[in-house]
Length: 329
Length: 256
Image (tube, rainbow over all chains, first blue to last red):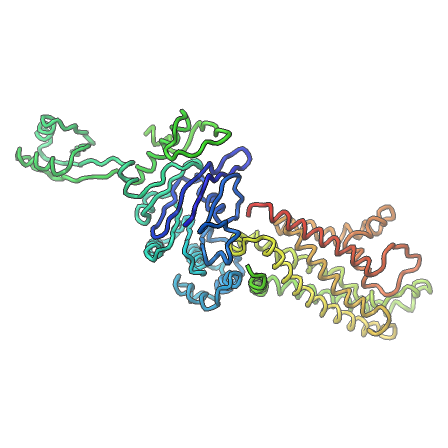
């Protein structure tokens, strides 16, 4: 369990993290989502006591990070795969981490095996590919067999096989009842792994919700229809009081009605359908919509989605922000 | 957070990188070889010396002549032990594993200091005995008054140079910046300040000049230095304490 309360970080004029409050619960994968520069890594560094918060508090199992005895046995983190001395072998890198937390040497061999680096354990880390570096970082996170795991952009630079491996690993860690907190700027990646979402934009909390609720609340569901009898179908739908959007080509889109209803309607009028498919706007769109809304909020002022606590100095309204282009398009 | 765990971890770190062997090896080899060379040259010069020079002839100190160059490798060792963490990004991994920054820094400094002292002490004895062998008829014995103190002091001097560098590197973080300040300082600036009469009295309170007093057995004629061998080493130790304390304060306050 990670508890974040009123967490803020200011770098000079810029408020990188602005009054974040959320909990990360055990047993599920919690995705930490935000566009690049939203403050994800800064938040994670503050969770690990690496950066000092300007205001607020993070507690790991009820305690501050620097009050944990042998912190690697409570929380393991992959922050930056390059945070390794390149001249040191993978084994020695893990060994020095293990020793600092009283973890037995045998465990080093175990985690090397888990991440598949046993064959290169004696090799210097500077010869490692990005994927091997990520695996070494993950081995470090797993070293203390911690109840909480934190991964910052773990799939960056990995090949498909590596990405699949990390997804499976995160899910199995959560299934074991551990707390798994993983950041990404890719909504599509989160959709495949996360059960719960914490979304931030410009350092502010935008959403703290289950993945299912997030999709329901933030995405449009519609039915896509293609028919050789397009004009007839349009007519029928119109008479039934159903609004149709012509989406280019032969495709029609209908909001707010089930595919069953439309299919039966078409059958009754003996209209052939080539496609009748319920669609969900992609999570990527939902995510963009959410962040775009946050930008709107910043520009006009009003209650934010995530309801962050008020800060003494309101952040200046951004002239142009992430998501603007999407709104225009 | 048991201190012994951190010490073991730091020992693994220090023994598992090549720079440790290179820097300490170089410090030992350069100190001993240059000391032997200068001792051999001094032996031949002795006969041509004035009576006055012969009075302040210090065979022990001469055998330590290689220290002036060997200490540069010690500086590199001290700088790299600390700044490697920063230049590689390892510092974030290290501080996540050992979040109490005082324990982390002092554990690291303690291990590196112990290793540097072991190497420096062996180097010191080696350079003394080899130097004396080169000096032939002008040599002194380890049992002579003040000589053992000078030889052990030579080891302490080299060690303190390394620790001073660790403190400076902790404050500056960048290896290039640290070396760029420390190397010219100890190799040039200190020597210049010490030899120009206007700054001589200030220069003698610099860490290397004060500390190197411990390696002298014969006091030069017309010597007006206001401290003895241990006093000088004490001044140097004070510099070291300041550097490490400065490193601790900046590490404590900084974001990693």
